[in-house]
Image (cartoon, one colour):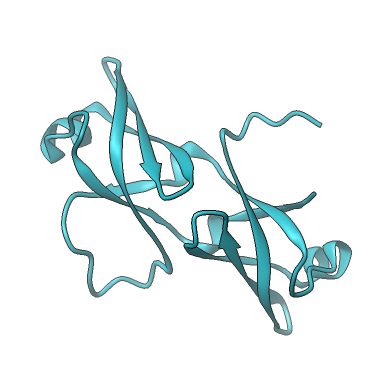
Length: 139
């Protein structure tokens, strides 16, 4: 199956915490970072992710926010430090390519935000993704 989601990060399930309506799944990416996905209980039952299960964490580029400094006081669980490797700037939106340890991410942000952050190739950033915006695919 082909997907339009550009950010497809391979990893392995390290833990699953089931809840009444949602489950959280921790994934260790190939670069060593941990990502948390919050998925519905039904999805968790269908996928049956168990410790050691290989998965892909899927994140739409529009669901990635970028920060250029230390990030504190946020409920966002997924914080992946990286470096800007390319920018494709349009009138309204900019596509920002970020290399994180072992992976490449694409973030779609407004051009004004990219300008305000002073993003250029080589800028260190932190990619921020809410756990509810991470989908899982089994391999």
